Amino acid sequence: PMSVYFPIPLFEWCGFGQLPVSVVRASGVLLLLGLLCAASGTFTRLALTVSWIAFFFFYGTVLGFEKPEPNALSFYTYHYNNVVFFILLILSAAPGIGVWGVDAVRKRGWAEVSGFWRQATVPTVPTWPLTLIKLTLALAYFGAGFTKLLSSGVWWADGYTLQAYFLMKHLQEGAWPGYCLAQSYWGCVIASLGTLALELTFLVVPFLRSNSPLMWGYVCAGLGFHLMIAVTMS
Image: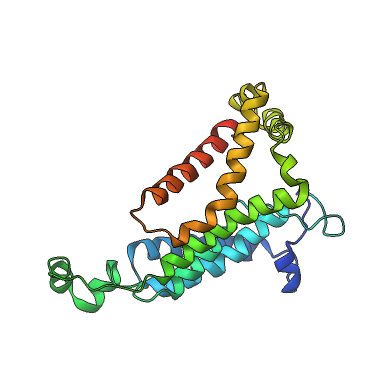
């Protein structure tokens, strides 16, 4: 009751105000059920479609309560989980999404499904959904780096910016590792340059072979990047 709600831009464009609590609660339940069904391969395409619709209403409302300012001052909206919406949308349209799991047993029977993996040549499905997901992630990373350059130029990597973020998170969350790292100016410069390099070059990932050393380098760098954020900023 003490929270302030400002609708996210997409809610405003669609003409939605603050949704009733019952609608938000129902969206959360549908999202959970949809994800569980999709994970087990039960009515997979329908479950994924329900999931991305429910995700939009549920997390769209959550983000509205987290907007720091009304749109008259800033359109900034927290975006820590928005990529999930796009991935669920892509998967809901992917060919062959119901080839495995409960759907496969329901349509072809257990005997046929169990023999599916013993075939000399396993039937394949198109790879464009996976490529499109990689491209979505690449655009998210590149967008993060591009907006840094757009707002601050290369001076975003001056070390002081990252020091400020570390100290802010220490005050907000009590993140001691970030506070310790903030004491090293050159450490913050190196981390800033590494962040920009990772984000701005991530666009090459959709075009790399899955088993190439460079691909695995980006996988390790991405996982390490988010692990460091979790450790230093809680």
